[in-house]
Length: 312
Image (cartoon, rainbow, N blue to C red; front, side, top):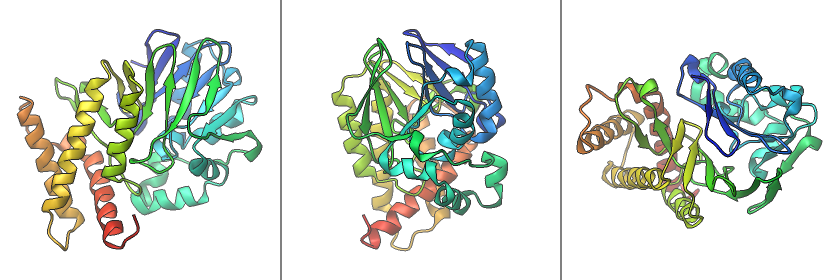
């Protein structure tokens, strides 16, 4: 699978992030002006180009590149795409836009998380010319034709996170704000499972809960997840996201004073195993979620450390 037609002239492209299907999506909105939501990492650049070609589009046809947030699995390939999309304007949160113009701090932060594996996982970062970047304010509007997109600042996963509401599909392009929707093609399980993503370094459960409330007040019918595909009705994504935030809050309350990454990883794995069991899913282990368990445990640890240091 590489292309999914979601109707309303919206298409999903499987980016084969991590070299695997069903991990990450980019979304194309075809209208008088054409928008691309997220690019994946630069390692997915050729896959993205191939997907556009299947939609009979060239990079030069892209008018707007919208980045939900600057984590490398969403925006690492933005520089390459902007080089090829000569007329495109890039839209991002004001706190994220500067890191796309000068990605040096973004690269440094990624290396702190992924270490020597950073290049192999994500590839190089290419700066985007500042004059081609628009820092979108909260509730800013972009009109493509019949599609009108509204940008919402939605911190909780990242301070620089945007979600985008589309008036035609009545859907929200949620990036990582509405959790990860694990597809059976990724996990090997025979069911879909959803859980929040709490990767470092801006995760805050209370702020995430507030952003979820705000998004739900928009009454979307569908959620487009970067990871992976759609939740319809949208209530499915709100339910698993809120439940996961509750579990994480309870986990944090029960942790000892001197907490370690290993302890958080073990506790989070147990919480997810218990949740799967409550849902009636019998699995041998949570190993299919190992990458995200690692990232989420780091994010929870950083949150605890910031809170203890009075930096929240």
